[in-house]
Length: 443
Image 1: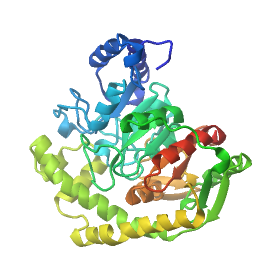
Image 2: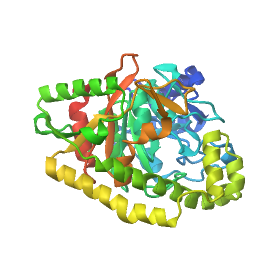
Image 3: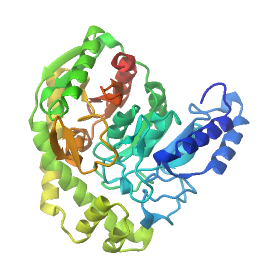
Image 4: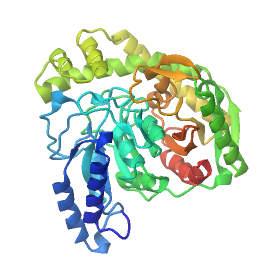
């Protein structure tokens, strides 16, 4: 919140901003009445009783529970599902003084990377409404990228927080798996899903993490002591030539400022990611939604699938209902062999290089046209969009590692460019400190 605004004024401004950008389809629901009531109460609070996020309007992805608001994942089949309580993370942020204002639009049920929601409309990119936001946390990222909110919540399964943060020009953070409470989320997978935090800058992102964890805010690291690994294969492959060139320019700025860079390759990361990713994601999603469809909508999975609005998501759930997904054997191989091997590969990479984190361009290219949801152009080659956008993001998700996407300037088409950092498990505060130290160097 601006120091010149009361909490009530900040909420009013946020609502006005959402209304001014209504054509972007940023939100599925606004609760101005409840937000203003909380804001007015906060404005009566003495300085000594104010939390670290006092009066900051918060936007929450619609698959995360906010008491009294629809908990529908952007899906008409769950339109009557009203949250009876806040998700644990939302409750902690309320206690810190943040004010939930609106539910952010998303790729339906968080199962996709475009935020093309057939029920609420595709989320438009604030930098160019004809371009997509990425997903699935597109509404949160776009609302922050538009300057309406400073802080927001998304979720990240295989890049669902980092991809839209990169496309929309905000900071996006996936914590070490298990760092944040996992209750109150319409989860796809227990192994891969986590709350993702997003913010307009690293200071607000660090404050969000500290509020969730009841810790002090991570300050900036000392630039001259930062050591980053540049893992060419696989993380710098399969991306637009412009992305690689901009990434190298960003590395040069970091090196000129005293950051140590270590070049290396570890191609087996990609092979292990491919072996583990979809068996885990699809097997666990089917298992979870066999239960959730019945509990939340009173429907079988097949009946629920038929009520999903977006064709791509509906098709996936119909396949799950027919049992056409990876079976127990593939899942067990992913969980018992490929995932531990991937975690070991990352651990050895960090040990061998002495790096605090690895660094690479977040995105395969700048935001594609909003209506091109099936294929993506990479230097004239037409590739399937979903695997192309997630192939490098999914590694951190499967290994359970903290990952941070930071704005790093603009592409030639004036759309945001971003760099991603992935750190060892449990090094969340160190990663946030690195982000705070290099934020201005990247831009």
